[in-house]
Length: 227
Image 1 (tube, helix red, strand yellow):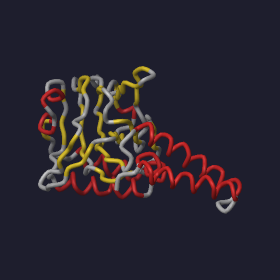
Image 2 (tube, one colour):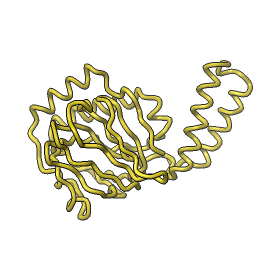
Image 3 (cartoon, helix red, strand yellow):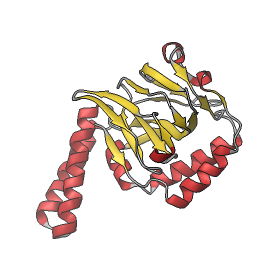
């Protein structure tokens, strides 16, 4: 399932993030890449242990906690501390797949990467190129979102970032371990949850059919979830 989460960051937050990131000290993005992805990765990142990276990452996590569409789709168990990257002219990231397991630097915490997320900080009109291309069962999907919007997709997907030919592309990226490992199971639960919310808004949350569907949702979640 590939899903756009709109307005994770407000315009004010986007402007503040951009100001901070424009003044940041960047490192070679290969430092956090695996053997295969490192061979095709050409960008820069904030160091994972940088104070700015931690501060902005915490603000992204706070914003996600207030994004019900993200919670409904991801059913997050653990979220990797958000990282930040920058692509300038001539930089891109060739086709690759994300590592299945990530270790949070400086801790013993490991998480399974069920979902990948990219939160766009640069506006699409600020740069040319830099599209996120995600391979799906329905073909390659090109993603270039407004600033503050985020795309969520299976971490098992082959994907790449096309070469930037004008301007700079700033983004945050991270991974989620879901309570529900299987993407198809998460998609069923997401569709059911969205239907319940729509019917609840129309008929009231105490409508008998809404109550029955809510019970079905939670019974399926009990069957699928790992907590």
